[in-house]
Length: 203
Image (cartoon, rainbow, N blue to C red; front, side, top):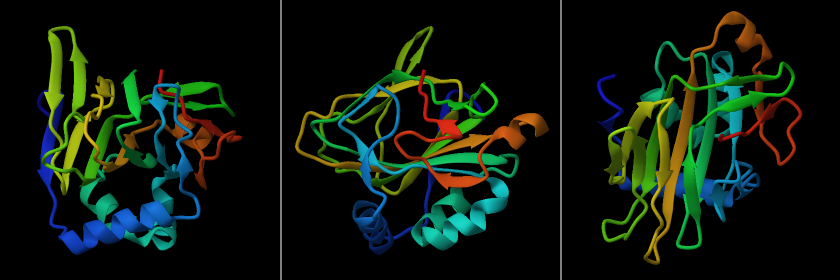
């Protein structure tokens, strides 16, 4: 992967996007984010799983199946998937995506983070994905029905949404773990407010 990020077009039509958005918003698991303190007034749901459970995840969340197939890298063996909804009340501060595995006391960083943008209004003010580098900030304007992949060690935040628009995305943290770390990574479960195996940490 050259640079910090790259864009990938998706083949999905508007019907798929609307069904995906509806499935996220109406899911029994949808609610306040269980992410770090940087995520203020955001909503969504969180799934953590190893690669061998992709079929099980797709069975329980069928509309995520196509996104996973599109975005997942062959070398990734563990994932944290987070449908995420922001609006004018929300803010996402600067952070690096990572997971703290409580059972082993290990903090792991993703190799790559992939974000599918399901709902982005072209007239939305703010809501950019902003990378913080030694040379300054690099702002990426999201586009609906597109995936943005970026390196897992990149510091980033989302600029404040200044208009009355909703921003819906599916974030896929992709990990390439060694055997020991992979054994400590949860097999497959929904992350709750106080999970027993994996803590959603963003520091």
